[in-house]
Length: 119
Image (cartoon, rainbow, N blue to C red; front, side):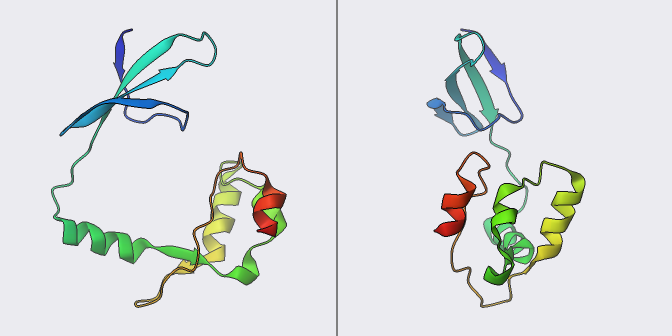
């Protein structure tokens, strides 16, 4: 199989077959044709050090309060529209210094929304 270079892959089942300092190769089956494909995924390195990256991640970390999580929210995707993405951002707030997030909830739209909400 020929190997393609991908800047980003969709989230599909794949197997990592090679890992190097500058990237990794994954093997996946093409859904439409059933052909096996190899994709090279580059690992982008930041010129910043680990402490700067961690600081940037902390400053951008957001959460949604439990009271704002509804069944309807679980049924929508930020990909539905720009309006949905903006609404979701408005529902969230920055995580305060010293505060921790109680739980991470999967944002997979393939999961059962009712089961996720009930949990």
